[in-house]
Image (cartoon, rainbow, N blue to C red; front, side):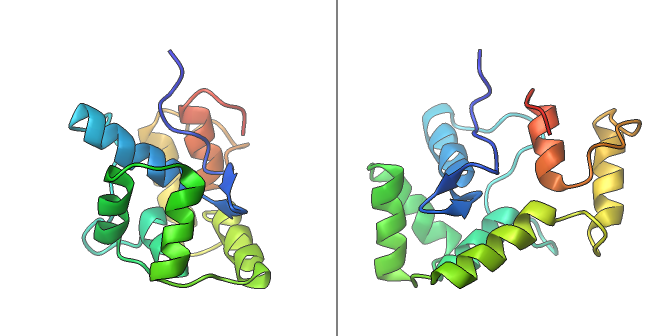
Length: 143
């Protein structure tokens, strides 16, 4: 069986992580929970990728979740975000994607990446240098 969530590198409307968030919301609505180790929305005291995407788009995670549960394609949900939040220009999307793709590599999140890599039994994998890499490896994709 294929893993139920797409890679964080996959884009919808040019935005990384967005499609993965939609996958998690849909999976949770359908199954009633997420696989162990996964979360939706926010974690107390921590910025999450879900939170960062919602900030970029100017919508709350709760409103996004409600809209996804109403149905529609990825592109329709993204257009709803643009209409009810904000439509970032190409430069903001480029900067956002660059930040997200490199998260954990030589930044303040590096220590957390090393810890999560070890918790996943992947401490020996020096090729896992970003959180995107870690997600992809944990889900059976190449970094």
